[in-house]
Length: 145
Image 1: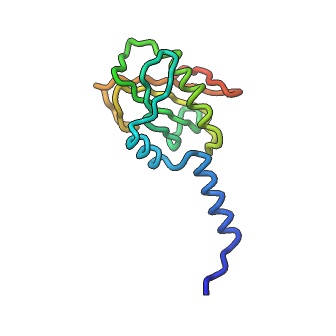
Image 2 (image 1 turned 30 degrees about the vertical axis):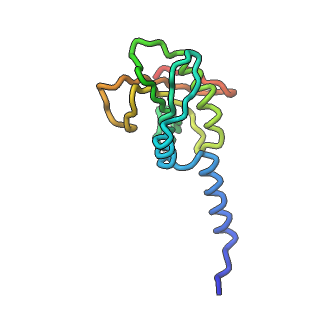
């Protein structure tokens, strides 16, 4: 005979599944999916090739909960102007994907890298750019990082 299912346990399981779906799944799943697909290409104002590397939501930022959106840009050079493109990535790509994240991020960090670099590892030979944003009313507000 099968034991009766506890309603509370079913509710907790359903709630946990809903939260994972709302947040877009677990981080390891996102990293594996992005690597296998070669990264989704995201349109930016300059027309340069920008590919999604991953999204990190489990590392705290300077303002509390943070969502890090990491992108790969082949041929990225440190002298290039990326202000408009990074703003567009924040407003058009990152903000819509923060809805339902738990905890709600207080900060969005956009990073560009000439090649994939594992999160948190130093790579002095790889050009990387970082910008930090707070957001209000659906728009990213550039913050000094």
